[in-house]
Length: 518
Image 1 (cartoon, rainbow, N blue to C red):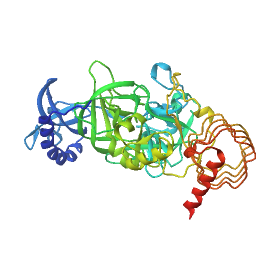
Image 2 (image 1 turned 180 degrees about the horizontal axis):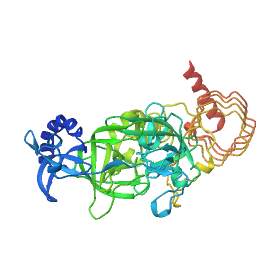
Image 3 (image 1 turned 180 degrees about the vertical axis):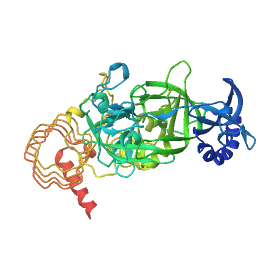
């Protein structure tokens, strides 16, 4: 369902854009000016049908009260201006770390496993803040929203996307800072539930973004609570309807006002004021209340086809005007791709090499489509370019994957792969399928039976014996030699490559590994 920006308005904005870009720095330098945009001029609250350079000010005053050198001119190079009052702020919410928010102040502070977009998150550690950042000095817990699940373009590991000012609210942030879902502020004085660590944060002239590396074994799903599966990403279109789901205001609807907003925002002590350009401005749908509020920072803004178009980070105090980074700029700055639902991949033919989703059928939108398609055929519906090996799944986190409201996450729940060596024996049975690869060698024996199938290949040598029976089939080949004997019988045939029994699968994998090493 594509929305077409009227050609006449699009052409007029394109004509105005060079003049706006030349003038915006001079305008923002004037006291009280917080943003410059392109939009329809309003007069007495009525639309004029005339495109203009819109100048946002923190407080609108009568012209007689403003020094002549601070006045916004009525027109610039023949283009009319329109002065509009907006009190624009970041949309993370600092909460006194010692108090529990009452339910009346929240829409959703629930625990979500698998991790999805549209839900609360924040740093585990509170931050000490003083005026003017907060009214009362003290330790504050920061709350924001997870936008969606993304995958690293290099490693293929799963990460959660949000704003830099949410996950890294001070200049002292560092890689590895623990993040919790829900946020600490939403879980009272006690820290919330850890789900990952800060991997990267970028604050540029176009992007306020961060990604959190999900902890090994953490379940995740390529969807947004209250909206559904993420189907991809797209450029925003002026006038098109959009929606978002955030930690504070929940599901809300709006319409894209502009793609040309330049805005100056105060990111707090130690960072200061920053100017972001080419931002998406969004008006709330009339009669539906606020589009955003504090705590909604990091929400994904999606179009009618559930494609992500922006990353929400700021808005005015009235909640009817919101600002988002263009999503392509965010993905490129953080070197990630959105994780999209399997149905979207089938429709678009997209694939993602190295997503860690071997056998699961997920893909990162727009990356390595051909490799993804080829890998899907070879691996039974998914592709991973990284060395992968099956192993145990943390059943508490991964086996069912229910949302906090009790609904099932549905098909396709996946978990972050285990990326460190196992140095102690497995002493309990495997009772769920192994859905993600092991990327380090096994150095201790398996001492309990496997009761679910292996759905990923072995790509590292097995260094200890299997001492319990296999009660489910191997569905992928062994691609590294087995260095210790099998001491219990196989009770199911192999399904790998059509082989009739485990021994055939083993030797085919062994020979394949030797061929690869040659």
